[in-house]
Image 1 (tube, rainbow, N blue to C red):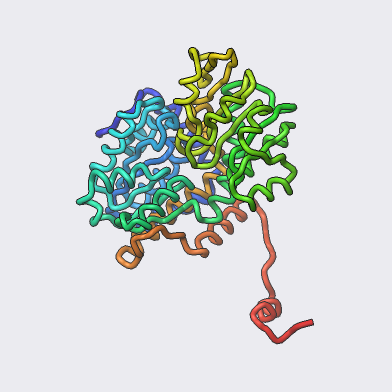
Image 2 (tube, one colour):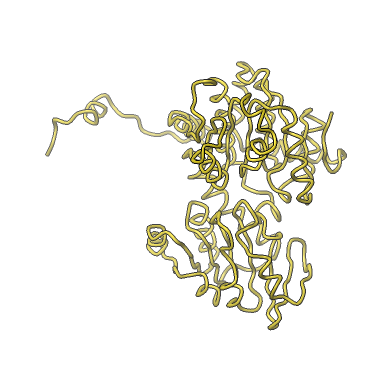
Length: 418
């Protein structure tokens, strides 16, 4: 089988960790059982560009159970868990092209490897797969059924493609499903980001000043968890409504150049470029720790930091110390890449259960509705969100209320007033 992984000998260790994650993914398990009976993806080729983690492995197995031929590559050079990649190849017969720490050239060669299967469906996290498909395999675009996109950054890129008339097939924005962004982004990113920082640095959050750049769902989660650990949280924002919400939630809000003077930790989750740049680096105090939990490593202006530094050295795994010409030491974690996957294991399985349930059902939805969907960025029907949430509640042993006929009639009427 064609593949490119670090070491097949890691397969046994990977299989144990994949099984451990599966314990906390009951919704995806039920979908996989349904897929095994119904085979909704029979004969379809799926090219997936996702973080190669234990949770992703369970998604790949579910897709294969549904009849799909699945090929997987990494959506970030530092996010691959090599033992998971080995297990998928050795134990499940799923071709994987991913090695933790791969360089940029290898990263894109792996993307081309999964695109070479001429997929019917793409499954993306950041839109590198779809953008490469459109730019280098344009003749194949018309053969596509559609794609799915996992994250905010990818959705932004795809909406730009659609707006400019470039997007050649429908793409389901998994990130826009409530059972994805309300839980994965807030609880998953919130916990896993701090987990990555603590594993990399072993530093104490209590009493520290933590600057969170961006107060979307990811920023909300990070700020709340940092506050829970005893940190003083500062938020930077460009949107007045979100900034006001951060103030009402009890955080200080100020421009980055001002926050840079007092911050001990800096965490970016904006999806934009150079969020921590010249004004911040010029003002940062000695010993500041900077990291990113947005998808791409563009949020921190590392070229500028290099330009004002006299040297750098690796102090610990995933910790590089830059010494500025005026004598300050600034630490950058994980090369500015996703710290929760560079230095830790990414989101807990409990939240990825819902995210990847959306991915699996999104692929099935595209195949079922092939030919009737516009070439645009779409959202799964609300009924899918409700189904996933109901299954998750059932797995947790939680019961909820049901409307009585009288209540349903009241909500549907207009006659009854005060």
